[in-house]
Length: 327
Ligand code: SF4
Image (cartoon, rainbow, N blue to C red; front, top):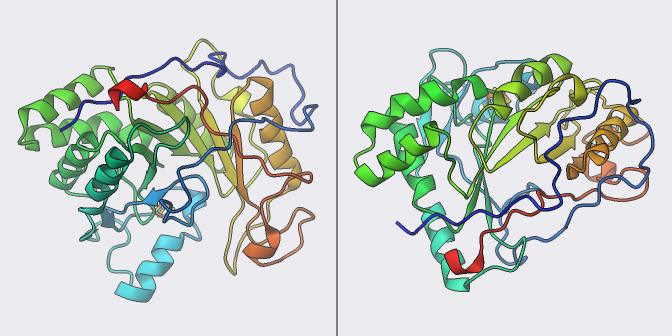
């Protein structure tokens, strides 16, 4: 296994918490958070998700945990192809056969040589389940951790609706890790020394989930912490969730819901998120309107697009690129 990439400071990314409750949500900063907009070479990207390069699903299956799950794309897909047999409490999850792909992406990235800033491939794990699902066998998670730690040329984007499970799940996987070096790295992670190429994120679709999950995320060891505010179901005030000297969130992604039964997302909620991010210099990425456009009219996802107030918002976590010499 190669050495983990070294970490740089978050230059240009504020370590301030969200500003105090005195400021008005939705005020000012009409241009939004700028952020950099670099991606790996277009030929590398094979995920349709705008904020990643590759999608890797180690397993398929999950159980609903909150309102954001109501129209879960992955559950509908499992219904269609497997009769829903991998969904819900007690349902066995399905281990996929695509585990060689991240190693292939990692080798290809290594062959390309030191990346220019922003060009490290990103891997979103997992879109058809949850990497911290406590009904997944611990041995599978042990294999996933070994894979993540063996592929340091990739930036892993580990997104979960279950940040509360981080320590218990990693502790359960720990004795199942056969390689002493990998076990040592996971022990280091649990002790607070995060791998340099792993980003941890949580989904917050409403105010309650923001207040529950953001403090949990902020307490986890990670070089980048991010929020996926999708599907955005109501106005969310991030400032109520991280008051005090907590480690910061480094990136916020927002988006609306897609599909026949998509719930509408008010433009004012998106603007308010954008402006909260701009106020504390946190990059903001607006992924999509979904199946309601900026004016709240039903539309296709394609027609809805991803412009807000006449422009795209493509912020990325700034100041995070491994030093070329360590790649
Ligand atoms: S946590 Fe994610 S994958 Fe699991 S049911 Fe909810 S939306 Fe679907």
